[in-house]
Amino acid sequence: MGIWNQIAQYIFLKKKDPNTPKSKWVGYMHGINRLSILLFLVAIIFIIIRLLTR
Image (cartoon, rainbow, N blue to C red; front, top):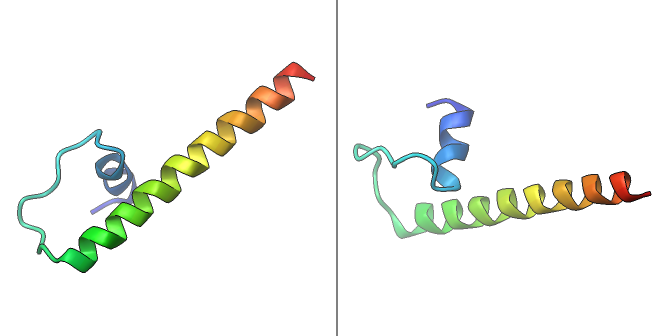
């Protein structure tokens, strides 16, 4: 699976692959990854806004 497909699944843009194994620990890992990607995107938007308003 490509990295762009995985990111799209993390931020709910694409449905998950039904053939992937399910485990609560993998679910926790995906939740943390989803949170980190969203925080990264918020930080990038914040930086861009600060650069444009100066």
